[in-house]
Image (cartoon, rainbow, N blue to C red; front, side, top):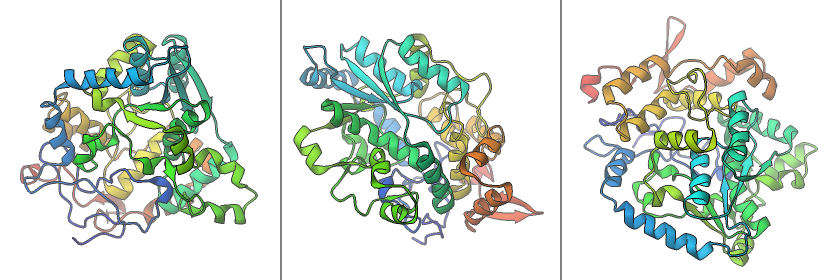
Length: 406
């Protein structure tokens, strides 16, 4: 297969059930990620169906009563009889983590400690939902905010080196669960859905366990963040290894001694983001935004961080896939909208520029408008983009000749 300059297939293909293309990157171990890496991307089979849609169909064949029994048996093995915390639930108080923590406590009788890796910059609605998670949802929480000067530095470097400004946050989000499990000696961590549902290899959904590569490392000396080796950042700046501790995976030795198990609730309970939203609204005071999210048509998904829109905008630039595409795909798979509706929504919103927090984003990473544009344009792959009348256009989009794509 011929690959583009960013490591994705040069030939662009679309799933005939949803609106995803074969440019969608799969989840990777972020602290090993470099720009030159070949990108693992979603598989689209010879019948033009992506793995995420194939798995969505398989979910209808799973015996969910049996899966729930497995969940209850699992939780019984970890349940504390002394009132100690018996499960760590990482999250922000958004719809997914709100659902996960609340249902574990109030339906299944666990005593969760929720832990939050702080967003770069809270939105008003994000802060409100975070507070309500505890005050209305009745859950204990630790809000962890990493060294802000380092986090801004890493976010800027990730934008410059990878066009991936959310990478330092993603690393923290994945590390914080096992990190606090190790610190509090709570051997069970429960995340919401497995990201494999949305485009990793389909067989990754057959396990309830998070792959240990995401939170364990044999050797921390050569770890990479924001496209830079940590040891090089330390040599070139006044940051020290202690500043990086929250970003570092736990060691094999720590995990062996404590036997931390990291699970996905979505393996045991049929996961539906919209149903999580309804549950969280009713039980934890979660509220959607009062306006749709830029780049999409939704009001309730990933709304707690002012930097979040630029994560999706940069995926649009690198992979031709924006926020509306991601939202529409999961709603097609959960029978909320049709493919025709999704195509219309993607055409209308996917390429919208996130202007609302743009100036705050520039200030946060200390860039000018001109520098921002230069970096963005540097990452536009020639197999995806062309300039027409001084305006960048996608060469192939899902709404182009949809009758041929389908």
